[in-house]
Image 1 (spheres, one colour):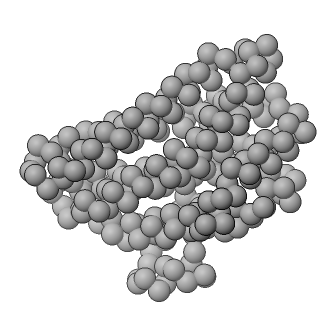
Image 2 (cartoon, rainbow, N blue to C red; image 1 turned 135 degrees about the horizontal axis):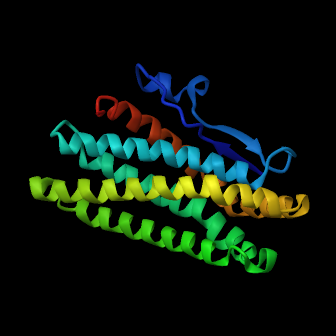
Length: 223
């Protein structure tokens, strides 16, 4: 069962061919079950590398919108598609459906409330993306609409950056401490099962290509 990893890097491309050639692809396939050194948190860290990369692009697009620099409605819509498909589905499903239900009863439920708060943050993040999707309908109607889009995007970026920091600094070390090697292997196998359909349908490669294209389009959007 293979999956891909998109490292958090920005590649400078001189044209479509240079970005889409196999030499310059920004994902690579690897196998969880064959990599005996990989842990559950390694996989989640890899997911966050992609999420951080997309948040960086959303921040660039928002900056351009706020400063009346060229940025299209389609760029925002593509970012929303990636967030909905990768962050909300690919990453959060691992935690919401597989990992957190089991962790809630670990060590007599010592982290139950903490895990519940993280789950609520997932719900809030999805709500903000729905709000952003609705706001984008009025993208071309004037400054007021664009100001609303920027406000929602900034709020989402802040909340996600904080959420990621909490998981990486507090949750992941605890997971590494309490999970046995057999439990690690079990969760990794379940992660692979969740990802199988997307990998076989080429959805992950589609996101990778979209991210590369957005990095070219938003290259001049920076503070």
